[in-house]
Image (cartoon, rainbow, N blue to C red):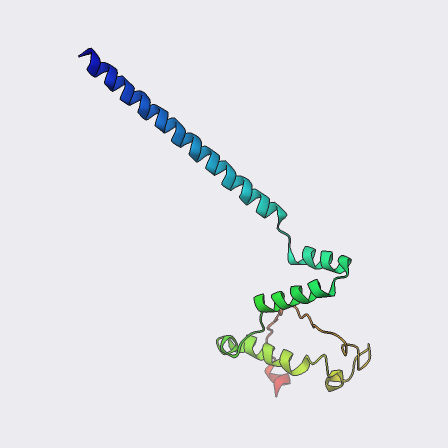
Length: 143
């Protein structure tokens, strides 16, 4: 009977020891994961910060990589996306496309910066949003 109690105590102690090892492992693993996550998040930077760093470094190769990556992440609206927009937004895009021709400023009456202002530009950055305001149409004026 005494042996049975001793064996039972040993098994219970062994289980407690194994649980303690497992809890220690989980705590360490959680700490490491949280530390790495914090390190990655705190080291991340916005596109603006990265662009400013590249500009200050005067690195044309890094600037090219930046704009090529940005172009992949923010492609222009596709024909399919355009067809799925409501009439007002689709019309606004069509107006933008018709008037925004930076390489041909004469189509809108010229540019205050001269015809060849964008001639040597490798990239043209356009904002990724458009504010559209809708007003009431005066039927007397519209005719």
